[in-house]
Length: 175
Image 1: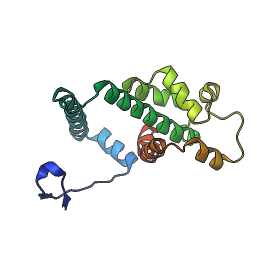
Image 2: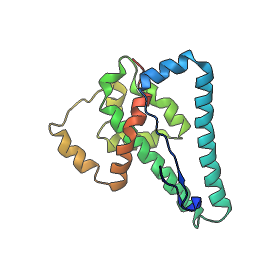
Image 3: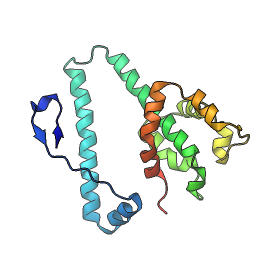
């Protein structure tokens, strides 16, 4: 049990956290369409709830500067994409025949990541567009850890990068 947010009035709720192996879950969902539909419905409603909450914040005037708020949300989305991209670029060998751009195309479309944002994210990761198309680095810097530490000093970048690993794993083809 744990404390709820401020709206709960200090009441406690029981919370159950489930963890599963992605490959096993995908296999289970492929075998059980009812379970697959239920999970997709739950995820869809969660996304809809969050979008409605954002709309209410805007319409109720809880956002002082809508333009700045929207810009901040767009920047967060681009930073999240750059973090996902960084994690994927570090795992190119796991794609076995799938090109990185194939895996990222759907994500980019859903999240409105245009070519310019994609190229800026690649540069932030130290990759060129040509290297990305080839799926490998052309000239490897000897001390990658030092380079990465310098490149990602931005606090927001480090925070987003930390949370993107699981999302990257979910985008990888199931073995």
